[in-house]
Image (tube, rainbow, N blue to C red):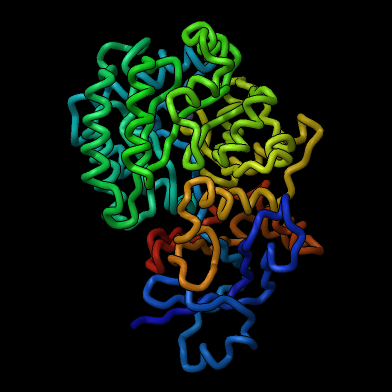
Length: 434
Ligand SMILES: [Zn+2]
């Protein structure tokens, strides 16, 4: 039995601050202690309240720091770390010019996939991201590569083989039947191993035949514990093409719904251009949305309607959507998310943003019974953030007169330099100063 404790400012959430002003929804300790036992949360409270428990313990005191739960990236593509920052395209041409060639580049190269997966996961940890829902490619070995490396790092990570049997480069295409068989065997091989989970992953309606979408629905029915992970209503051209390819569907979401892919375990990336019908159907199904602001701005896709999604009561997490997104840092995502809200005359408070980057993301990915906040018994994925990471942060954060003001300045000025340490299940997984 090993007990460790950290003393610092602490922030975590017990609920969604956009929907609840109950006391305890937002938990802020200006001076708090987090106690970990064997990789799980044993206690979080003030030093006074924990005086008995921490007597005799070597409590690590971290002034100028803020401890938060590990960030959750609810939508990201690991093979695309190599083409991040690809100039000059909107979604459909960007896929042809950058994303598909990067994925084809892993076709026959197991070592290259493993190397890319290792680099990607280390970058996640360096940026404070301890859990993610990740696109691999259509090649099963790229899923093996990512899961193998994530297992080694003991990360709570979810991924799946991309299903894509039409309107794509021939090298990347599977068939409806092979995508079903491969997904099924990957589920058997990886689901529940360590802290890993599986997501059935048709890329989007444009690159799957109706047969393939049907089989994706069958995989969900046969495996009620896996997620569905895909893209929805990212770009106008994409929506028009989905309408042309599936004329019988009421709208884009209905393409998925007809195939049994609209469930309470479905995560839809983007959802920038939803109709009211689509938003209502998503809310009714308790499906989750991954809001990907850096990607939506970079590809010129549009401005996500956060207020409408919140009002509909939807579960929303943040996605970096790298490589169309421009950073793996949740700080960059929150920062750009705020600006998207501003452009819509809405607002994204720092509490809403940090909630979405932690517990909100965990809820979207159905891993919130394990991670996302500091409820006693949960797995101890957490970060030590440096509130004096740069001269400008030291100066600006030092001038903040409230915790909320400090948190907002951190969200706007922060980046990987602010992530001093990342802990995965209580173990140090990244140390900036090492
Ligand atoms: Zn994406």
